[in-house]
Structures are given as structure tokens and as C-alpha cells.
Amino acid sequence: DTGVSQDPRHKITKRGQNVTFRCDPISEHNRLYWYRQTLGQGPEFLTYFQNEAQLEKSRLLSDRFSAERPKGSFSTLEIQRTEQGDSAMYLCASSQAGSGNTIYFGEGSWLTVV
Amino acid sequence: GIQVEQSPPDLILQEGANSTLRCNFSDSVNNLQWFHQNPWGQLINLFYIPSGTKQNGRLSATTVATERYSLLYISSSQTTDSGVYFCAVLNYGQNFVFGPGTRLSVLP
Image: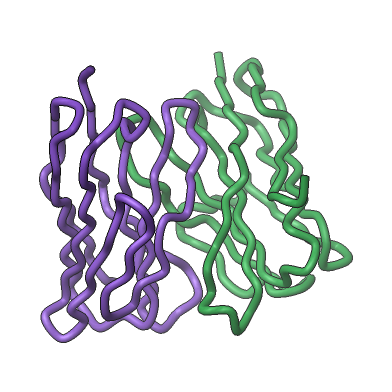
């Protein structure tokens, strides 16, 4: 399968714990995006990488959130000291510059903070 | 920032019916895409359509960039078309802004 893959698909954590999500983009894609989606809403942009450089971050990405893409391939999104308001689906997407910037999404990682 | 609106918010159809979904955006865009989110949460890219008209089977889309709207047509709807349809636009930046979606339910 050459699509975008995310892991884990579901995570239940206690408030105050740290969680990390991983995204493996489509192999030839140099752009990688993280979005967050809560129930009944559209996806909201969190951050964007081109290769290993993090080029844009949303105001939604508080100090408790950090994202990396160390070698320009897979990416991780870490949430520290989780809060109940962090409960959402975290979506990763990738695209290749110059191809009309068509983006392809993974299946998402559902986070429930209890 | 750019605002994206979608209408209607909810739509219930009988199988076999046709429908039109609308996306309005508040500023010029250089990229517009339509997505279908299935009941399991997977977002599937339907069309990349910053302007003009495209067709793919029972689905077609038209974007009139000068008037800042896009339409998604679904003909002969099937129960598998159920889900949420999102319009997402790129306003010369790098992050897509999504509309609130249209929730479609196709009844057998």
C-alpha cells in the first residue's frame, strides 16, 4: 500500500499524559501536513513541512504540541500534558510540490483524553 | 483569513436522486479540492478543480473562480455516497482551509 499511513489509529490516554502520533507519507511526496478534526467540524490546519523544514504553524498549535520530520520522510506529532480538549482526530496528509498540490490524507489517529 | 462556506449543511436523498453541493469562498484561490469523508473518517480526494469543470463517473464539479464558488454534482446517488463532503481551498499559501462540510445521507 503506497498511501499515507498513520499510527496508532486509536489512542485513549489519561489527562496529563503525553502522546505521540506517527505519519508515513506517500514516499515521493515532499510536503506533509497535520490537521485536527473534532466531531461535526471540518479539518483545521495545524502545521506543514516541506522536506524536513517546518514552514508554517497554526495558532492552534500551542506550546504543548510539537511536530518533527527529521529526515524529510515520516513525521511525528507529540502532545504533552494532554487535556480533554485535545480529544479529536489527528489527520496527516501529503502532497508533491508541482502536481497541483493535490493532497492525500491518511485514515487519521483518534485521540480520546479521559 | 479566507472564509469557506458550504451549503446545504445536511442533505437527505432517496437512492437514485441527483444533488448539487455548493462551496463559496471569500477570496481568490489558486487551488480548490473536493473531498468525501466516509463514515470511518477517511478523507478521499474527489477533485482538484481550481477552475473549470471535471467529471468522474457519476460525480462532476465546476469551479467559477471569478465568482468564488464551486459546485459538486452527484447523479444517481447510491447509499455508498453517504458521508460528509468537504471543499478545501488554498489561498496562495500552503495550508488548505476547509469548509464546514455537507453531510449527505442516501436512503435505500
